Length: 404
View 1 (cartoon, rainbow, N blue to C red):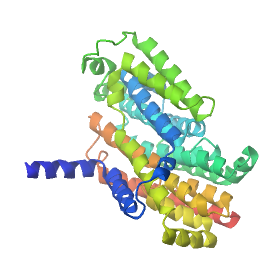
View 2: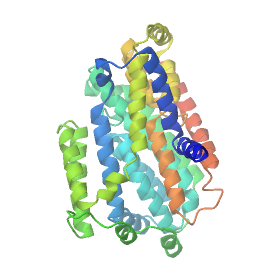
View 3: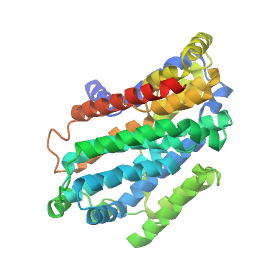
View 4: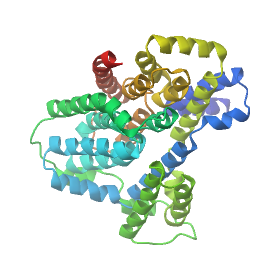
């Protein structure tokens, strides 16, 4: 029994490494700052609620066959490998500007996996996911609601919209140019899809998913197209909460009720590990700001270089917690805003959106039978991920540093 428990624990840590590390970091800070009433103020409940809603709705759309249908449309509309992947990457960047980078990836990565599977281009999955991760991380920087840290800093420093856009214009333009150049250089022109093989490689269809589990007694039976329409309406409500049109709890309740009635499997399939990682990072950042020695250290570092400090902290604790932590010691808000956005590139933990990319790659890899051992390798993905991300980070820091 002990060996089985240990094996299970080791397996869990391997599958949820970042969650385990974030939990340990949060637990260590709790030793210095015991739980009290201020803990409740650490959490961005709106971010957690909206992310949960998007995660579950994407699962529901996947179960209803929406991604399979959209994938076939992509393959029909864009006849070459380069143009299709460029369209997927560009779509991810645009969505990230208005629905946050995390949500853009949650919506677009499953679509990309199915599209490439249908077309028989699984060997391009790793590169496509990495480019989409960069496009979401760096494309969302241009709007106040494009990244979670932007939402926080926009309100914390009371930025005006024009001021915000002017600050982020240069790093945004440079980032999108880098993404475009990478796609154009890396991918061949004119590679045609092989839909017959690709269709066979996509293992799970909506019909198969529908037979995986019996519905609850109170389920409402709707045709797939009607279910997709309902899910899209729920998604619009969630985005309205992101844009501050609705209170976040209202679409959350609608999503919970809607999915209980239509597809409770989507609720069970949500990435709760990612949500818990957010929670741990919020605890870590909140406690760090309350430790006097850390406060003195951070104040000195921010006075030396706000941009480099925010980039460095983003690489270690992720850019959202870095923004929350460093804003309390910041005298140069524009440099901090650029730093935590540019700092989203780099290590796997630099942005929680990167964790979503990695998790979705592992899932897509497990559901594809057309990928070679080399293309599905975790270490291969991480090497490519680090190569592109470090390159982007170095170029962007060199471009932005003289202006901060």
